[in-house]
Length: 210
Image (tube, helix red, strand yellow):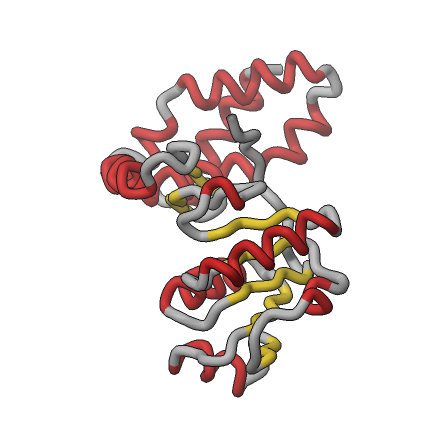
């Protein structure tokens, strides 16, 4: 059983071991999260080489060494070399560093879910490592339900968050106000107006909640 959480990786050092297409996908997602990506591999895809050339990632063109773990927060082992996978997992765990080993659940301290992003709304879908393909299929289904309007709703609610906190010191009342906004069906009616109109409507609900 895994404990789900979202990590703030902005400027945090993360090591990726491997230089193939799987490592490339992992690096891209880590860069999107703002991580300080370090990579070790004798060979690189063209895209990873390009990232290295423009210094978007730091690369050691060789096999993994335990010293590569110095100062690292997380490790993603994205190589298909099984001895290297085991070496990385053992070294990381020996230092108390969380490691993810692609396609080797037994060598994972954490797993990476299928992710659906709509602006600030992020849905993570996991089968606890049982079937990444099923997780991807579930994500595809949710894409039809969680539309870009969900991101707009989150953006509008974020705009009024500090206002609600200032006007309603009581946390229970604040919760009631936000629930009232959501219960108006904002996820449906926001598709029929622009952000400015939606914001006026939300502020009207807040005013009537006093």
